[in-house]
Length: 463
Image (cartoon, rainbow, N blue to C red):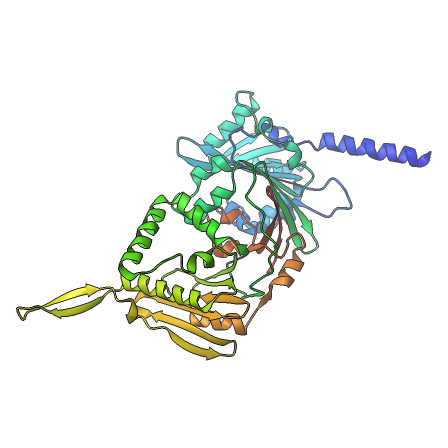
């Protein structure tokens, strides 16, 4: 009997809390908002999570620049006395940009008083204040409050935004127009991420764990092939396992038709001038999944970054075809001046592309044998090693040697630290990768893998 009464009371309390904790802030957010992030303290006393613990130091620095709050003051004097925080980006059609708005809920009177003293602010309720560095943004919230504009809550699944330390909504289709249209990475990523997408982030023993759920598929889930790269340098910017290069090249062609046209013309020209056939081995090489590491460039080079790429075991003949292709490309970029004697005794200087003028060299080191080619004038260097079980290519001899001799981070250990990822995952350092929203991304390494066609799971690990 007592157990029944207790159970009934617990259920009643949970229902009551659920009603109390409904997202009041969301009812004031304009329907055209493209990013909505909401953080809230836990309602349960045994869960030690607080919005002031969120790993957004980069963002706090931004608030210091925008609103004049030192990071320590914003966290200790504002967030520590607030129960909810929302961040939203709304379109400003007149200026063709996104405006940032912060909304804070607090029962602490000094906090409300501080926020209400800001130039552009709006009291949404007695305990909820919105503020921004843009007057038009505040006016849009005022229109929603007055019932003149529809709220975002009418256009999304609000159940996805409750019960987490941080939850988020992204209208990716509308967001695309504000991203750098000339950035290839952004173009390709936008092919995967479309529609309305939800984020849930919570504390875990090893940092923060998150899940991303899309209303549309992100694409095919990665296969279960084992890792070709088992260690990473400490300064890596980006790592991905089981990358489908053929799919990546297809997407590149889709988002950049000019590149696709140039590639087709190049293939035809190479076949006519150099008797080079891309289909002899190279098509097969690029059709298989690879592991890829991107690093900051140790020295200025033609790529703008350093890389290490691991292919599955490859025939020597295919590596020879790759050498030939690289020689042809370099010859086109750095033709040789040849003087020719004419029948009348005069001479003429002719610029000729001579692939054979670029010489590959063999070398040995502790990791075995490798071949490399260097062209200092073009700031180009490349090296590769044919192993029994894999084919490793690096952007320099030094990077190739370091890859075999030294491994700062073991990938399996990194994956264990983030239990929500599989062996096939992506990892990156937001500070190194950069991007239009890097100031709003947590510091630390971010890992994630695809659970299913419309879901990603991962975590944020401190350095």
